[in-house]
Amino acid sequence: MKIFRHIAPLKSYLGEIGSFGYTIGLVPTMGALHNGHLALIEASKKDNSVTIATIYVNPAQFNNATDLQKYPRTLDNDLQMLEKVGCDAVFCPDDAEMYEQPPIVKFDFGHLDKVMEGKFRPGHFSGVALVVSKLFNLVSPNRAYFGQKDWQQVAVIRRLVGELKFNLSICSVPIVREPDGLAMSSRNQRLDPVQRQHSTVLYRGLTWAREALKSGSSPEAVKTAVKAMVEELPDMRLEYLELSDSDSLEPLDAVITSAKPILCIAAYAGEVRLIDNLFLD
Ligand code: PAF
Image 1 (cartoon, rainbow, N blue to C red):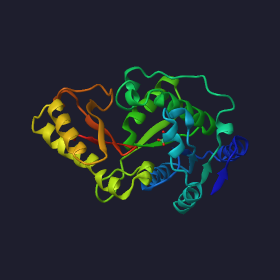
Image 2 (image 1 turned 90 degrees about the vertical axis):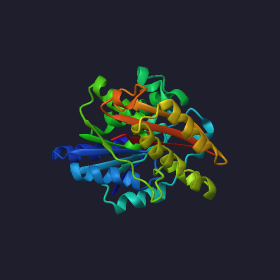
Image 3 (image 1 turned 135 degrees about the vertical axis):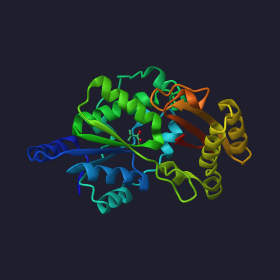
């Protein structure tokens, strides 16, 4: 597996493989890899001749300095995991390589970044769009892979690619869960054993809410019930539970008003912020 810390040698490698006409799958990550990331690598390996992962904790997408500082960084372990699953190359730049100057470009995705994550993490999707655009320009992949756990991110990146006419396809890969239902996330590493146990309430809340909505309960009643379910556990706090159309992310007041509704949840376990989601069908 090739490891690149700088853009110039990455470009030479891309030039070499480009001359063979290989297709490239890009898997952007912030490291602290888990099986959810490995599912992205596997999907890319199936579809493309060459898979390139990136590992970069992008400061521009953090609106909370403590969250950025505490984001787990496990590069040696990440590289071993990628090598084991047969990833072809990894680009793991530092801040100076990615941001020669402090960034001034901002993205505004209208409604798409004003709800849910965008509402509670202002500027987050602008930072994501900035770094993802840089990576698309640097690597020129045929396909790029993102996990469905960050469903709103998938919606924003699809819009970015459509509007800026990036010549690539966005592939979204289903959530990978722990045996007790908790969605795999790099942030799970920060949970203490009690918080880890309590965090299963996100998925329990989602599955309960899905059944309640299908049986005709109103989204408002369901939100109130899930908030109570989450917050009866010490140290747990619900930030939002939203029923939305999965394409437009417009909030829904009833399941039947969308062809493909999705339930999205965000909650804190102590100071660790977790998200999850579930399609209704
Ligand atoms: O989903 C993530 O890990 C990040 O938001 C991404 C897409 C790698 C951009 O930094």
